[in-house]
Each structure stands twice: as C-alpha cells, then as structure tokens.
Length: 289
Image 1: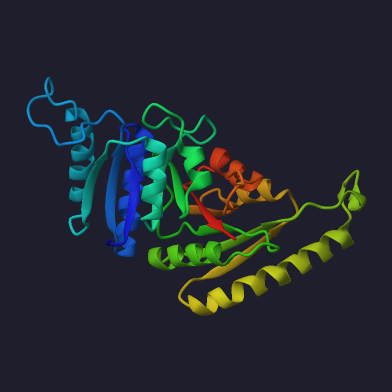
Image 2: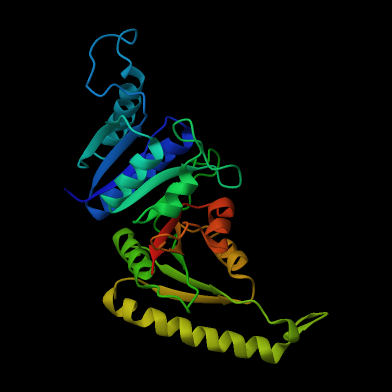
C-alpha cells in the first residue's frame, strides 16, 4: 500500500480544517492523502441514482466536495476518497495502522468533535498504533501562524523512551523547513518552595540539570537532521502547564503517550490530555514504548 496520510471526514468545520492541514502535510512529505468517511449504514455496494434512491449520496458528496477543494489547492497531490460501511472508531483505528498518520478534527477546550454519531476521537487517539493529529477549526480573523516562522514544539519527559516521539517531531520539522523547540517541564519540589517562589539555588540547579539531560537526548537527532534548527526550553512548572504555554504560536505540538500493552486499558497521560484540550495549535499524539 502506498504511504499515505488519512483524515477522518464528517462534514464539520473541524474535520474540514483537519483535511486542509493533512493536505499541506501530505504535500510537504510527498505522501498520498486519503479522505475517509465511515458510517455503518452505508450501502456495501456502490449505488447509483438521485439522492432519493441512493442512500450513499450525501456521503459521496461530502467526500467528493472535499476532494475537489483539496485537489484545487494542491494540483500535484494524490487525493483519494474512501467510503467505509463500518463503525467509525474501528475504521479509523484500522486506517491509522495503515497510514503514516491519522488526522482528525478537534474543538480544543470543548468536547472533542463528534464523529459519525459518536464521540470517538479520544478513544482513537488512545488506541491508534500510529501518530494521530487533532486539528481545531481554522481561525477566521487573525489566521494561523506563519508556516515559515512557527516551530514544531515537542514535549519531552526525559525519563521515558522518546525515539518515536523525536523521530516524528524532527521529521516533521525537516519536511516543513521550520525550527524545532523541545520543552521539558519540571515541578519544583515542596521543600524548595517559599512564600515568594522557588528557592533560587534549587531552581538554578534543577534548570541546569534538566538542560543537560535535554540536550543529551536531542543530540543524536540533531546529528541525524542537521538541517533542523533546534532550541530547548526548561520550565519550572508542571509538565502539562509548561507544554501548553510553550505551544502558543507553534505550527504543531508533539506529545507522547505510552503504547498500551495487551490486556491493559488504553489511556492518555495528563500532558496529552492538557495538550488536546487547551493547546491552540494542532496536536500530534505519538505512541511510544
């Protein structure tokens, strides 16, 4: 199967914004874009005729309209439409396993957008074997940050294996030709807190140690992607708060989640939860060991 980025479509503004984002990403990576609309009541075989007799008419129109718009924006991009007569959650999880990444719409601080008659984006993010990107509806007034200036921001916890996370973040920054900012949040321990803030000496030592660890983790990836301009940031705050703050003005925020093992209920960590609900930029959740 040809490498592709898959985007889930349901006709909402969020899913259309996700499709436009996915098209830009597919073009920058030289990949095919696949538009997926899943609905259990779709006719198994293609139907023909007018809207009155073709139960797939509106689903076909949804995919065709998006496909036509994206093809006009990206004449050299291969855009495929796919109608799947299956449960949306299962269809998207399967599609994610067959794609370089899966892209879905999100309402940010509100409830994650309802796909195909069910709120499935969060379960898909928690279960997918490949990276899932959630995209909010495009702003109407100020517009998105400039692609030439906005960095890719990646959240690192340092004590976890981060190979898949850093590979995705560096590859994305290289494909876009933008800088990468690695962010690490570390809470000040209770004994080092004072009524006027953190103890200065403790804060300096924590920051120095974290910078050293962070740069050590980034070094091999910087060598692999020498064209990527890399910066690092250590913030003495909760990891979730540090990451959300650092994502302001970013082109993409990349966070990790532990890939679930057999028999373990899939879940998202507090950093991923905070990012998905509060970050104003697109958020990529990358499963890792």
